Image (tube, rainbow, N blue to C red):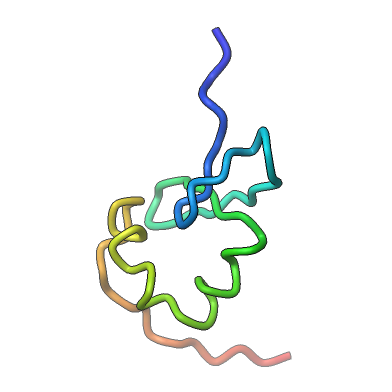
Length: 68
């Protein structure tokens, strides 16, 4: 039995109509489309409720010192 198509957590677009990217969050897997990715990067506060529904616990991890 085929599984339901993946949908963007923000806009709800289906992978049948538009590409979606896999997003791993707090041990859960969800999806986001490329059009909504900037909202996740630059304005995550606008989709906080949808992130929580996808499994995020609402805490922000401390930044780490990434040295190139």
